[in-house]
Image (cartoon, rainbow, N blue to C red):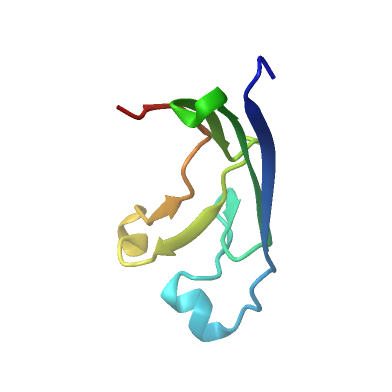
Length: 104
């Protein structure tokens, strides 16, 4: 790679589906319905492409988190449900970063 050293890495993570009980539904950690499902299985794939220049003075990396652009509902709060406004949190969307470094 242009006289330097490069590498590529993938990381994969998986969390299995949550078992739902009456308590977990009341707490909002396992909700079925409302147009979404909290507590289902989740996975993500991240990638990193790295290049180190000859002499290791310069380097660059391209990092992509969540390659599949899939977001999951992590939890909900049922405190606002009596008023028709339950709220929740979703996993972050895909992110891309370029990392450049130099040694002086």
